Amino acid sequence: MKKLIALMTAAALIAACDPTVPDAPAESSASDAMPVEKSSRLPEILAAQTAEVQARYAARNPAETLEFLGIEPGMTVVEALPGGGWYTKLLLPYLGSDGHLIGADYSKSIFPLFGFFSQEFIDSKDSWVADWTASAMKWRDEDSAPVTAFVFGSMPDDYAGTADAVLFIRAMHNLNRFESQGGFMTDALADAHRVLKPGGILGVVQHQAPDNAPDDWADGSKGYLKKDALIATIEAAGFEFVAESAVNENPKDQPGVEDVVWRLPPTLATSREDPELRDKMIAIGESNRMTLRFRKQ
Image 1 (cartoon, rainbow, N blue to C red):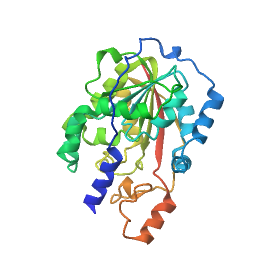
Image 2: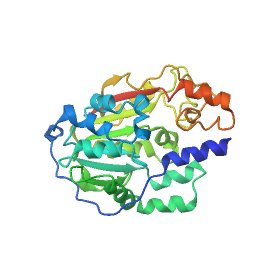
Image 3: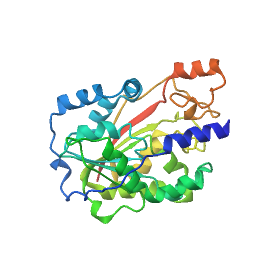
Image 4: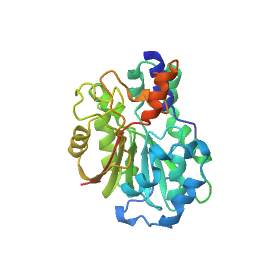
């Protein structure tokens, strides 16, 4: 069972392939991004996605999430751990040709710590920037944002001060989980702070642990983090906590100390041979998620 959960977690982390990297944009203030057709563009983009993608809207609430986090056309946005591109494919057309989307992956050195990634997969991270950018180029058209990428812990200097927003959407638990073994959360937040323009947005959507959960259980290894602890960590990295939204909350998700977030949809890692348990997990739905907005100080 542990191996199955590990394999399903691995599948959620794998990203795609790509070359051709445009130059990073010139530095400007966070207010320079120009909103373009904000009211109509996103609904049209959402309606144009596949049925499989649209089936996730009820749980992921992309329109409400992006609105709360202040993401607008024309912005330069960093998307942490973009993976297979679920949010990327929405952001590229939404940001538009006046915007810029930057993918940011985990450091290569985090992947051996999971214990289940093959050496071939780990070695493939050497070309992730080129590979992912090439994949993202296939998801865009002439009206979409250009794309570039970097790896946390080794962000090029010319990215500093270029971004209006950095998004960590279900991407912080493993950074926290392995922080003591490589400073991964510290490095990612330092790069997020450095890449942002003054007053830039840091947006977080993260599986939320119950307040009364043991701290060692809520370290990210089960997928969950405590809200107060995460806010304190981000504030210590130089960000001001601005607001939170209930848009991605799910009060039916009440995990116990034996539970992992991957027991729930869409992974259903613990119930593949137990239809009754599977039905219970589907009835709970996707995880309870905090949605937080911070500002670069």
